[in-house]
Length: 101
Image (cartoon, rainbow, N blue to C red; front, side, top):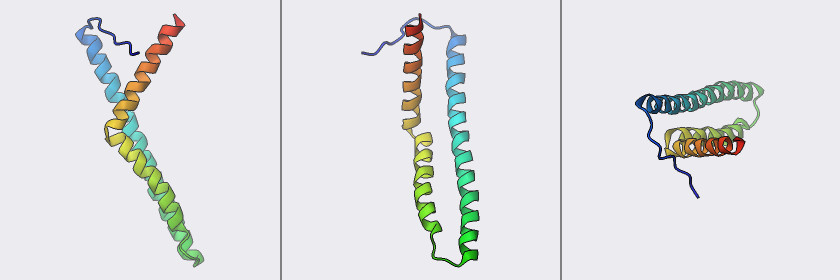
């Protein structure tokens, strides 16, 4: 069962909600950029280590595994999935707030 708040909202509260959603999206995007940056820097370092040691290209396994994680993170941020997660978070927050009353 879903509880939808149908009470009228003032324009300022709607603006605050939009601002909060926009901030969450910016935070998610920022998190992805940090993840991507760390990935690129660490992978470059590991590739150099792999080159200097002259061993087989073990770094490709790290690239593949971590790369899948970075790709999934990027898809989650750039698609409707992030909106669905944010909506779920909002519903859960409202539920917990109602339970606290």
